[in-house]
Image (cartoon, rainbow, N blue to C red):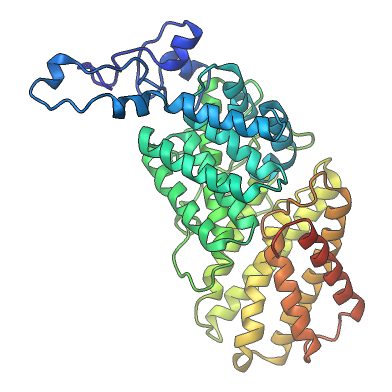
Amino acid sequence: MESPRSGRAQRVCGTCRTRKRGCDKRLPRCGFCFSRGYAYACDYTEALVPDASSTAGLPYNGPRKLIGSLSLDSTVKAQVDSIFKAMDLTPQMVEQRYFRDFHPSLPIIAPQTSPCRIHHGLERAPADAAILVLAMLLVSHQLPTADSLYSALRKLVVSVQDSRGASIAVVQAQLLIGGFEHAHGWVEKSYVSVGVCASLARILRINVNRTGGFSADSTHKGLADQEAWNLWWGIIVLESVVLSELPHVLARSIAEDLEEGVSLPSDLVELPGTPTWSPSRDAMFHSPAENVSRFGRQVQAVLLLSRAVRLSRRPLEPDGSLSRLKALDKQTKVFIGLLLKEGIQASNSREGALPIAVRSLFVLHEDFVENSRPLLSADDIDWSWATLDTVVTMLIDAAYDHMRESACPHALLLCCAANLRSSSKHMSRYNVGGSKDLDAGVLRDLEVVVSAVRRCGTHV
């Protein structure tokens, strides 16, 4: 509730009241919450009572609506705490596994501003922080009750958003829900969730880059800006991946409308052998840019994927389209070679970007092999078959490595499940007269990989 002084609330926020701090009552975040880097809108509803001067002449509707608003934080926190208790988990356990297993593939939450710490440290944590903790639990743990937790979380997100409006934490939670939906094969649902994220992000203006690079000693404001910028890129990444699996959806992706020179994201954490900053986006398309973060490489792969999707869904023209396809194919293969080289040299591999880049090759070549034979020469067809043969073999090797070495083998990286489906499809074509370069053992290996993934609970 705003006071006559525009931009200020009438009462102190819930965080300052709990911690007995002075509150300047600024909206949407007071000075104390802003200085601590909390990315959550302050709760100014505590102890809110009708003002006689402002309600004169209006019918009194009773306390029911006010009680619902006042108790939202405590109610949501109690529900989240009961879920943790039933699962014998703590926010600290969720935080540890989330940042170990999930964060590297989609770094949209900075460890320094982890909602797990806020949820645990306050008697009545903000409701949007509580639902974000629950979303982190959903994507980082393989739970027998995951579907029930997913349904409960979606309802909580809607309730908090309706009551409090948009906040960074709500967008983060919604994006994690979209990632969960995509991992479970609910691609249409994931597309809807990402669309909601994009709309809320534009309302909050997180699509405007205010970052100046990330480092371990970044200020709280700088860290919050970088976290918001990473969140915007996370939306772009998931949207592009989902659209690559929805051939009947012809909508333009956000990635297609990006301006030249837009900054790439950071990893939000210091990683051995990985820079914490990224050059401008256009550097990647002119030369193999160095000093790019791991998430930055993933974004570069997504930009290639977006171009591949756009090109594959246009009618093939013997001259223009085919030459553009070959140019993008060459660029993607050079990029994959760069990823493989960096994966060998660095202590951490660029594995998150690799399956997305491989997805680009599937998108480029599958449709042409299936539908464009009359327009392609024999050499062009052989070229596409050879490319698909190579990526299938590489994918099987990578999948074996993932299942053997990953701390969380059921958590496939973005595009891995779609790549496995495309590999199976390619092998089916091979069995009816396609490529002759793959031996029968490759098909058996692929069946082993797919069976293992399905046993882990991931839809393929």
